[in-house]
Amino acid sequence: EFYSAWNYGSLGKYFNELNGELHGPVHIMIGGQWYMNSSAGYNISTTNGGDFLLASKWLWRQGFIRCPELCSDDTPAEKCECTCPSMYLDSFGSYENFLKGTGLFNLSDGLFNNWYNFHTFGCSGKEACYELVVKALCHVGHAGEMFTSAAPYDPTFWPIHGLADRYLQLKRLMAYQNDTMLVSEWDYYHDGMSPSDTHKICQWGDVTGMELPTCVSGSCQGHRKDDMLPMGNFLGRGERYSNWEFFKFMSPMNDDLPYVYDSLTLYPSCIEQGITWWVG
Image (cartoon, rainbow, N blue to C red; front, side, top):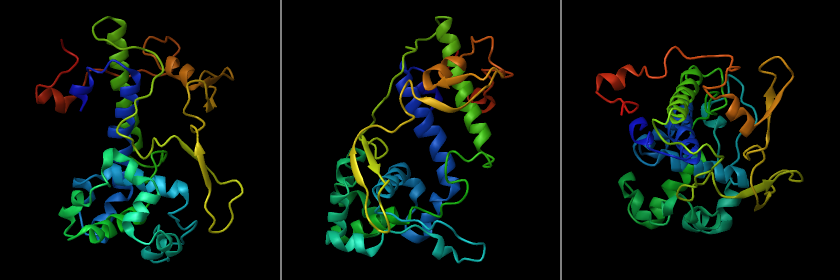
């Protein structure tokens, strides 16, 4: 929550929390992941929704999950869902072996290592529980047009992004005034072997049909400090920005920043509860 996060001193922690706790889950949950409630037999929103989502993404990146490329308006919903083709599942021999073989046992702080973590789903026994888990992972949810966090037509896109920016602007401004501490150095925070932090790149260039890609160690282009953003020219000067240059451009101390918030400390619901983390 905002109150406890205010004490963080590294950018890596803020990048992790603003993206992983505030930004992504809101888009994803209302964008279709909640659809798994009825299909999987449990309420994903009160279990480990984020871990399931990221685990599904990792399966998809490896090619084990396949999704329709196109669905028309009159296509039945069940025909527009992601699945794990039986040719992949059967090759592992069991649902437990599927989770092991695809690397999920080594991720999410060991969430999938112990089948008893999922006994609240109403299953009895290891393979029955793992079957529910795999079916939920392979289903993904009903991925609608708001499912991705890069969906500007999603009405939640703008308040979420603005809220994250405004919060970090306040932290940066007060750190500049020596009222809080923030180390302004490019940083990453690796949290519990997240399935979105596998240090693997899956190469799809030569893959055809139902072949699987080759996954090798590496980091995704675009995430590094000096990687260039695809957009720019925010000042009409034809300028381009790396990730780090854009972070500096967004500083509340930058006189060239082409926007300003009405207030950095207006959080009505928090103030009503007496929660004002920016007040010493």
